[in-house]
Image 1 (cartoon, rainbow, N blue to C red):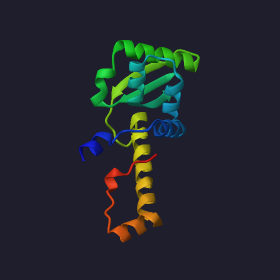
Image 2: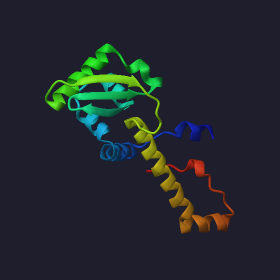
Image 3: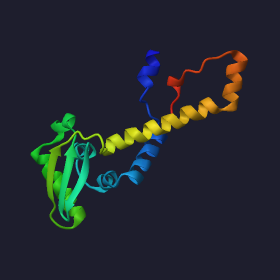
Image 4: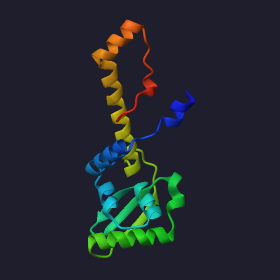
Length: 150
């Protein structure tokens, strides 16, 4: 049981790649962050916030309060510079704390995609005729918590 708990969020390289690809398709902000050139800590700031375009060249990032430690003057400058280079003109950047759960950050999107894949994997295993036969034949119990998407 302890090993299962330890491996619970273990993701294979293939799964990590699949999650990243689907994230880039679903969330335009995640795709933009993916292509921006900036240091990893600045990337973490961007991935923990959702983007609101207020006007051309004017962006507001909504950062989760639990991630406020990522928000520094240097990180804001690096992110503003990266956005300006991408936009081709100066960008006015504001960062506000916002825990509105109706809007997802890129990292929250990635977790939601993982949860969807996990649910589909569980449904697939539970509905598999071979698994059902083995359960009946051996009077076996299926530990649903051990199922992971691939």
